[in-house]
Image (cartoon, rainbow, N blue to C red; front, top):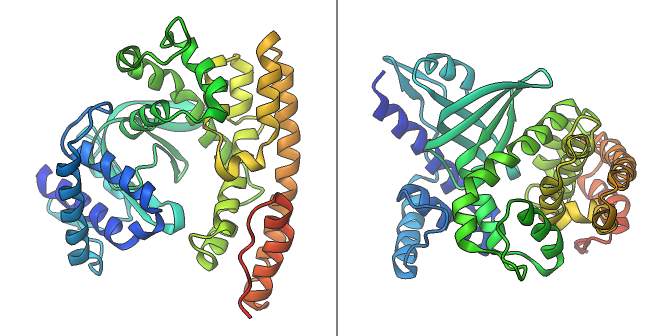
Length: 366
């Protein structure tokens, strides 16, 4: 196999996906994702920052490039003299078996196409599910999800996970300071007066990432086992309401049900009594997921004095019960597609899902 044309084709499809669907991100999120893509392209460490002027010039060039490819089709992948459909990840990986590379193709937020190519670090099995831990990325896109479940295989992409941890440690919100500082203290990266020791974080970033990879594996295990809000229902909803509050709530419910599944992330954290992981989970819980799991904040605060894990288990169960009810409502409303006006379906989502959660309900046009 001639590697370079293949890698270029994968990256080309990553670029086409970004050109088509970068509009799903807010301006702030897009800039952050572009910054991390710049770091990847230039081989920079997570803590290295590009010069502002250079980054802005690169972003302008990238946006101009997107305009030239946004209407292009995804390209077939040349391997061993044949061209493979870029969506046939299983076929591609069979042909890559002896190369140490792993290819992925799927859909992410708002049905944005996601492609990647990375070096395989190791393979393991968790709860009967094959898991691939991936290292250096050969091709990537803006989305770069660091944990994915595709065709019954869990992919953990270590490079974007490093950036995720670094970025979140640098931008600790006041509301999550207690939980994240508790997590970081378990790794010995706080100073005597409770501040984040940036040099220590640099030195221990790999230890933090590797230490927390298991919790993301168990999120995907929970997603694999959780069938209440199935992918088909969620795709139907996303297709009708892309990049909307309805999509975000549906995805968040699916995530929370995966986390709170009896074999999911929270149960794993409790079983192994992983204090750092609990702190990271509570600290990273934000946006709609925080609205759907209000029990976690109070439970974590009560947990700290005596390390009573039963408090976390009780919070998991209460949260799961509530989100199972929400998932049931989602499925009930989703069954209306095809024989009920979209406006009426929208009103039911707003009235029965968004409003009770205290989320903003879009105004109906008269």
